[in-house]
Image 1 (cartoon, helix red, strand yellow):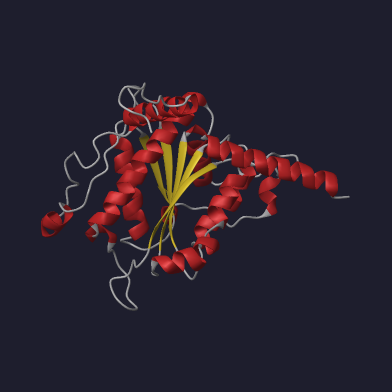
Image 2 (cartoon, one colour):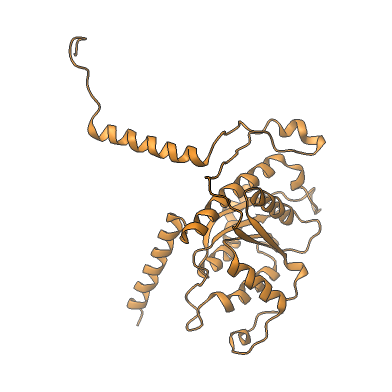
Amino acid sequence: MVNSSQTPLQPSVKYRLFLRICSYIRHQNDHELLHINDMQNIRCPPATEQTCATYPVYTTMLPSATLYHMKVVIIIAGTNEPSNSAFLATTFAKELEQQGCVTTMFRLRELHIAHFTLERYTDGFVHEPDLLRVRDAIRAADGIVVAAPIWNFGVPADLKNLIDCLGTFFLDSDARRKGLLGGKPLYCIFTGGAPATAWHAIMRRTTSSVPTALRYFGASVIGTFFEGQCVPGRGTFGLVVDKRPRTLQRISYESRSFARVVQTFASTGAPPPKQRMTRRIMEWGEHLLERLTP
């Protein structure tokens, strides 16, 4: 035992170093994420105002540098009107704009893009003006958002067709194996008519072609948002997410987080560390397979 007259035990060097690291991380986090549950609530329709006030609001504060020059392109698939995925994408875009981003939105139902054929890879092929508009917007963007409903365990065909056509521009012309998006941040929003358990068990896999393809094009997949039960009743379809304050709160929080990633990418030209590591592992695996494959 140590009596009161003895010198008290001092923390070890490793423990003091650990405390300093924790203090530094806490200081960095406080610089970006402030006043949780300490700001005004999200405004809701009068019928849900009282309910909405019970939900916590996560408010982020970006560093001193502004995002006024950040560009984000948002692609919305599906033909329904009104559309749950379009509503969430619009909410996502409004939050991005409040963070200082400039958004460009495309509704695929309003574009005229023919079915993909290998002729698009040939020199001199005349692409549709709408496709070239999407291409130019993605090239100029610092971030990409894709929103789509899930129909019969897959995304609408117009989105798959767009991705196939974009491979003409965002894969190298030699072997079509190198992505040219340069690590642009990507966020995916999906809506469906199934509970969250079905999303984790089945739908996550059936929709994986979208983020996987764009990752192959060189994008950095930052996150995926899924909203299930997007039906007002059994066998009926319609807009329901506008009456769900918790969903709107979640999508707004995800948008603010994505805005910070876009800012970092635009200022440094590099994707987040996790995405960089994933890309390196994929490149290492491809290189290894090339050496092992005769």
